[in-house]
Length: 416
Image (tube, rainbow, N blue to C red; front, side, top):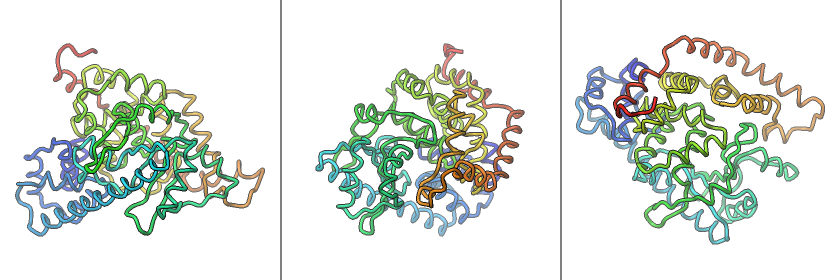
């Protein structure tokens, strides 16, 4: 990770901003990057893209040389993030109050709930909307409550396709002209096409409380939250530093994390490799404090280590819009430890229809052929490119030596 971030002072500063969110920035590294004369507009732009503006303020505190106008610009951006976060928190509480008054069981996750539980500060974690998890059978009632608050669905779905929506999608976004930020109403953690089954009812039954200032709200238990964060990061191919920092922050703020439960649930849900990729990234990017037996488990999955190394390097590349839009990459397939899950993921990604396609004229007999051809025409070059990159990564050193050094530093009795 040091090499990837060390290509230019901008990458170094953004990396240190991410580490600052979990109290692990290196002042000497920051000052060396500052002496290289970073382009401040680029630094701030990347910090926004990766969601670490508040961390940039922390990393620069008391450091020189920072031009006054740059320091003012960064501080102003961090203040804007904090103000929006507080406004979003107010909206979240209003939505949760309305849902609970209707007799529903909403659960807040990511957003303000994660900022409070993992970071201990509502102002620092950069996010744009409020995520609410609810039981599938309560979705209709929840939508009526949101409509009463002035929210409307961003994507329109024909009524005859509503059953498909609930079966194939994990959630639905709603927007309002009067309240700050959209609300994403979730009834699952992954769409049908992702071939990931995490039982929502179990998550709701194990919910934990978190204090948001004015009141406490229900959120995911920390063991469930850790897995959910890793699944979310993998599904989005870890394209933002913030998602890695979330994992590190949760681990650092939860010393009593029940690792046996984490591993048992990840195995039951068939997402162990996704968990390991997220944990490896948290170690390499943020020096997340993992127990010795978890570090040993990381070292035993060379595929997870290779995937984490590739994602760590790509974090500081310019975003590849085509590859990010691809419905499937080699990374997605290799992140599944069971070949059957990878096969279902491939089939559902290629042949499953998206919501916009549901609204088109039904062309029975052609949809199963048209979609694969359209995907191949649009994303074929990206598929070839990602496959070539994956082959290159196979011959590069893995993260095993770095994780091995970390394991040895935690004690000689660590399992091997």
